[in-house]
Image (tube, rainbow, N blue to C red; front, top):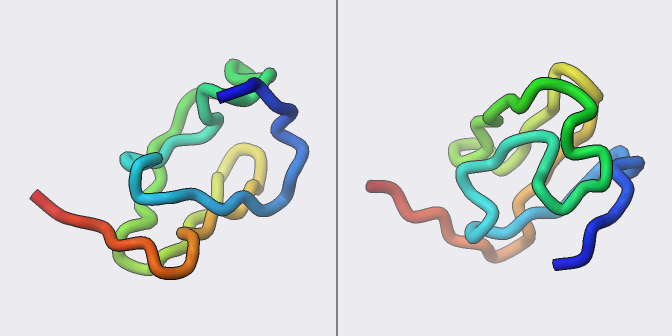
Length: 66
């Protein structure tokens, strides 16, 4: 996946992106703040406490637990 700026206020992610953390490896500023893991599995949404990026699971994504 090509690197991209982490300037979006909302990012859709898929189940293959889990466990979700911000910033994500494909962001150019991947070291812009400490990596934080975001619990998105139960609600389908998560907000990064550092940069305010809102993550949302893509419609129809199925999250499988252990």
